[in-house]
Length: 68
Image 1 (cartoon, rainbow, N blue to C red):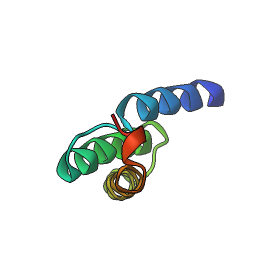
Image 2: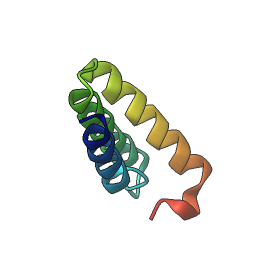
Image 3: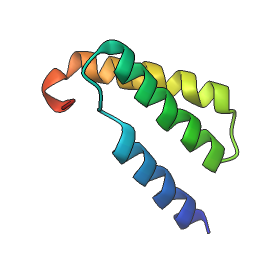
């Protein structure tokens, strides 16, 4: 069961992370991925959204060639 959760989280993160042309889109997609991950793992959804938004925005701003 734990592997299924990991696979679901990985699929969500891979599909939503590193997307978005603008900073707002990057933060929005990251927030969605973080919230979905937190929901799957029974974590704090608001905290997951905040971490996902910040993480994806920072990653995409520092690695613009990888966020297309």
